[in-house]
Amino acid sequence: MRSLLRFILRYHATFLFVILEVICVVMIVVNNHYQRTVFSNSAELFVGKLQKNWSGVTSYFSLARENKLLADENRRLKNELEQRSAYSRFFEVDSSNVNYYYYKADVINNSIWNQKNFITIDAGSVQGISKDMGVTGSLGVVGIVYNCSANYATIIPIINTGFKLSVKISRNDYFGSLSWSGSDYRFARMAEVPVHVEVKVGDTIVTSGFSAIFPPDIPVGIVDGFQKISSSGLYEINVKLFTDFASLKHVYVVENRNKNEIQELEAGNDQ
Amino acid sequence: MINSNLKYVIWFLVCIALQVLFFYRIQAVPYMHVYVYVLFLLILPFETPAYLLMFLALITGVSVDAFGNTLGMHASASVLLAFMRPGVLRLYSPRDGYEKNTSPSVRDYGFVWFLKYSVTLILVHHFVLHMIDAFGFYLFHFTLLRTFLSTLATVSVIILIQYLTIRRK
Image 1 (cartoon, rainbow over the protein chains, first blue to last red):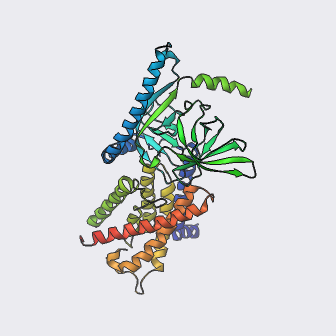
Image 2: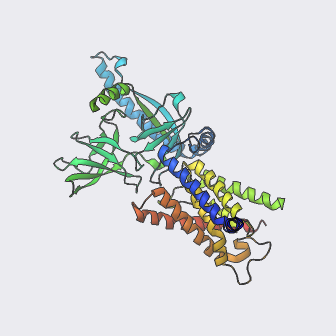
Image 3: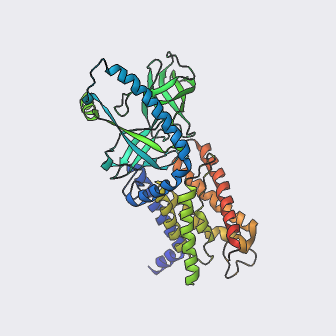
């Protein structure tokens, strides 16, 4: 017994090291599984508040750029509104038919150099945000809400290796799935496009609207290049993303008001 | 004694604050991250017992993790750094050992010694960190690239901080 004790005392550093590393590994694994437990969550109140205050300070430096971006978006929307109101003179528009509702939020934390990047925004369930809603920026799709607390939410952006979204080529409506390779935050790849589909560099890629997360035809990016994967006989398309994740500040969260109905209906398909 | 403890508490807070408020947000060069908080673990006194070193590393790592949504990643890399530190110090020890009332810094042991000491530990720390981030050997060359570029960045910043704070003592 005494020699065992002496042995432990002698190598106490190594024992402690092993114990602490096991604790760390447990933390990592738990975090990877539930990926936002109460403790680690930057959507947590304290850290969230701190980050919000700090991003309030830093946001002043990019005000000019942000203003220009928003003004551009306003101009586009106003033009569209003008066209629509020309329509509505002839057709009755019923507001209860509107399926999608937009919330606004500011980015308070963002990463782009990891493989599992996350974004934190300053709106949560109190503001009406809930899990699995789509998130877009002024220029295009940003990601999907992953988790949300009362006043904050975390987002899985396109540039997270776990991200997947159904998208289509705007010109001919052929769809495929968008994911990220984990290397460059400006590009993503669109897979599962059959080779008989005509693809051109410069084609616009938009959301397909199949997922019930995003409305159809939200811009995602443009085709930067493509190659045929010889083993599967499908195209892999390199997509240059519209959203600049390195300077993301304002985002919109999209709620699909009919999503529950669609999902309930589709859940019946498995049986 | 109390005075010197206070000094290290301040170093701890400064390192974490620098990391969380400043270096987490600077992403100027692809694959180059600065993890300046390891400075705190590098400059702790020679006499710090191994168990204390590892506990401090755990606390430092978890604090940094809490702000980056990476719970456990920085903690485990930091604990490994703390575990290896006494061995690395022994490896680079001068012929007569380390003198009393000195600390592992550029001021006391010179630029070359500190460079060797910090590069060794930071290289291991960053490699483990990026391996955990990638969680496997997928895109291993990116992991290596991240490790080397980040080591370069972190070591430069840490040595710069050492020179900036030398005169005040």
